[in-house]
Length: 443
Image (cartoon, rainbow, N blue to C red; front, top):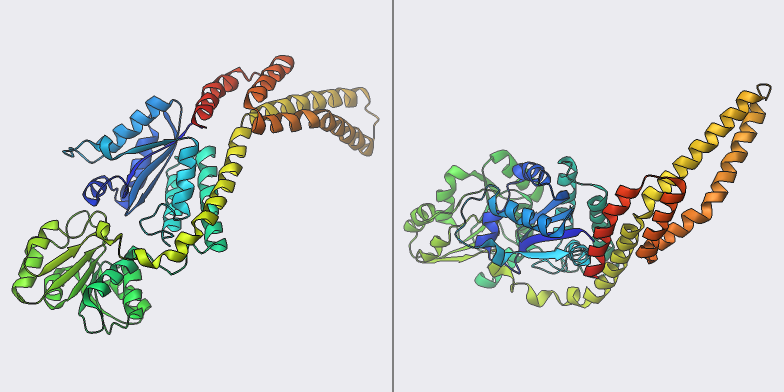
């Protein structure tokens, strides 16, 4: 298949690399439009989460397309990195790329197996690509099937048992550190999706109160009202909140460090003997790694959470074989649809030509027989339509079947039909040959 996935993830790149290549949500459409302008890229979608940045594309030429996608990742708004990005990237082709997206959508490739948020993030990637008009028929179908695989896996297996996410992992890490969160003073920075999950989980843990600090107080107030507890603080007052805090959970969409050495240092100077535990689940990171050097400050970033919930995922691991069966079924379905594309233009051109001939001959008959009643005309038109449909039925059925079973024979049949009926499909057939060769080489 001429479908590729080029990306980096928590498997291949540390958070300091991933954050350098993260796109602000507001710029995602801009990035997709820029990517679409690369001549070898036919269609494109970008999947970005805290653990990955992946570009899925349908390309004209494998080598040129992959090179252009890598060039895009290297150069688009990231400047000089000081490292070779190639060493962190992976490239998946054809079936591997399809399977990978299905594994991502079902939660098998997440930091936390079965992570609840990933399906929504795949849907966001799909919607963003639609808005940027960077999707065509191939990726449109691929992402729809991936979303279907994810929903099926959650409905039919235990892959989503024991609700867990990066936000809940952050709270679990804090609970393991403190033993109990009952008497702790807690600040949650950021009122987005992760912040909301963290606050809800903190309430479940019996925390009496929490301060929600956000760039806009209105968003923080919404979160506090939704959770049913907590206080609101705008970011300018963050140092005062840090001076009173035992635990900080940070998850904003900022492109710079919210918890820098100056802020944290000033807060710690007011309580030098009192420890501060910081869990940073943002990508790009909210906490400057340098704050870990400040006495009595402990910092855990998103990559440090991998082992926190490891022992809680037994039921999810038991579900992996069932999920993999679902993935295989979805891959087979997508593959059958993908291969059948050979037949689509052949069938369309053949039926269009037959219909044009039928309609022209019927009109000639009507011109020679002006005394025909309206009912007689309808009967004649209906009969000729039925004759054409029955004549073409077996041809259409067989070329569809061959397209999904034997691509070489399907191409051969397409060439014969093109020659016999003068369908003008030469360009379509020529374009299919290298793409089908590429797909076959990947199997």
